[in-house]
Amino acid sequence: MMAEQPDIAQTLMAYLDGELSADEAAAFEVFLQEHPEWRDEAAQLGSVVEAADELVPRPAPPETWDNYWEEIDSRLAKPVGWILLGVGGALLASYGTVKILLLAENPWIRVGLAALLVGFFLLFLSVVRGHLTERPRDRYRRIHK
Image (cartoon, rainbow, N blue to C red; front, side):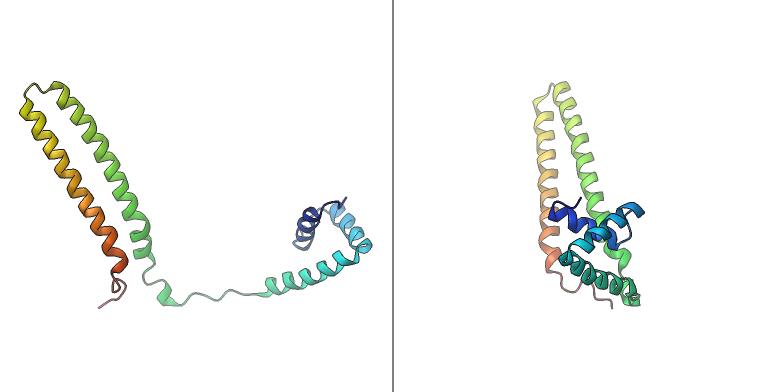
């Protein structure tokens, strides 16, 4: 039954956690009686499991929750919003550019559109670069007045 060492360790942990069926637990107890080294391991780990079961988590101090939603907003909502805005804008700009370039007969319209798109792209890169370089250096962003 218990041929391989990793399987024995997994079965031991399942036994200690009460995850084995009654038949499996009985067979494992027989195995433990036949193998004293695993019986000692089970006793040691059993005391660790008992100690872990007695642990009671302490509630977090109130100041932990002061900036909770601000952190969620700054780490998740804003970046995801910017990514979606950028992807959507890029898709619409690409589609519109192709349509205008295909329909525009006047070369000045094409040049103007190209200048407009390059300008938007450069401004967007500037804002992203500024955001990425400024944020890690702002040591006082969590200080409230």
